[in-house]
Image (cartoon, rainbow, N blue to C red; front, top):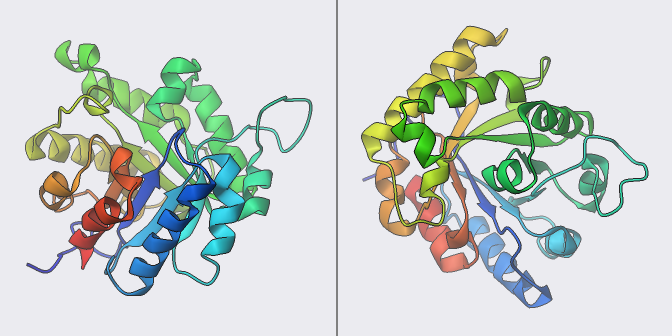
Length: 257
């Protein structure tokens, strides 16, 4: 069955978050993805690979001329300075990035990043000319306590920059309890949350929130991508482990052919 857009007018986006995985030997894996996308295997979808910072420049160079875009997994809020070990949005841009993920649940949890910090990083991304993929999502305890919608609503309000072009921001909903656990929300769960996010965006943005892409991210695999990606208000996916191999990643992106 051909893909039918669930948010009319928006181009789907499939982003691969490699997390702390990969070495120079894996540059060829990115090249395979670029070749597959150039051959039409991703259909209508825009494809982004977010490798570790050590591989960003090499991967972007190896795929020069490809429609595939590259991104960072995090950035510092400042453009430069005495911040040992950090990377600014401007540095990511210089290395070949077009996107950057900010506020991923692993950053929020392990690095104690608040909504205020995430907003500052998203603002930095826009300053540098990058598209910010802003992550939001609830834990299992928060969901079981009935707090999923208020938690995500608060993260949206606190993490999105005040002034931005709608095409320069992407929201990624990642149910924290589904990442790496093998658990996956039902299509109804995803539809409810994505509808809530869309309504929130429509209410609080100066322009219609229907112009912001909302990705689903939480144990997305080839086996469940077809069902999840056709849920209304799901405009693509933020893919973790399945993005590390070209075959699995393209099987997910192939939903949009």
